[in-house]
Length: 279
View 1 (cartoon, rainbow, N blue to C red):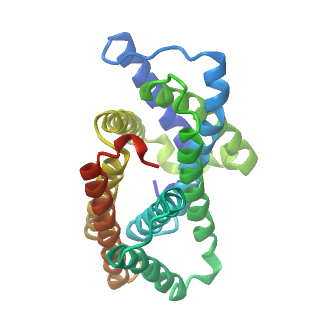
View 2 (view 1 turned 30 degrees about the horizontal axis):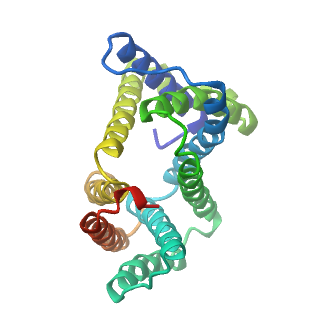
């Protein structure tokens, strides 16, 4: 797809995901509970941030190679988490933590410095919006831990509400009338892949919710960092790109550094039994 018309395609994808969740609930595979009016109002800003994050992420991915996208996102998230933890616990940064944080930051700076596509710098704006929305959403949710809402209910709310938000984005950005010019839209195979993508997305969200229930936040973040590391390597092998291969492997090195840092935090928190005190 090359992430063409993200407001249209992702609204369709979320529609498929919603239908899949409704079907799974009908067959009692999962159990979705209705939200109270108060819970809905409190979670609506989170849903909006979620929608903006997936839209901006698609825009960024249409212009950035996968390894560089993953590196910037992981670096931003891990650095934000670490800054918040320093603020809360007043602990100082160790030498290895400083290296793990500064290495990917240096790689990102080098990547930006030697980016020859000066006319396409908006891609860094989109990835910045994506990272900000992810972090703000996590911080916002942490303020409402007292709300008795299961992860599956949040997921279902995100899929339903994002359809509306993405449809509005499509109208405001002018993508809706342009989609008729997308030639693959008229091929059956495209729609079969699209349905598969929606189902796969729903399964991924359910898996993430399951992980959050089974493991600590730091352990889940480590799993996420490792998955991005693996996906980045696979993307270099599978996809053709105009970006220098050396630059991509440089980005993978940065992801390895972030993954190691995430692992060290997860191990440290596990040893101290800080599961309920994490940011």
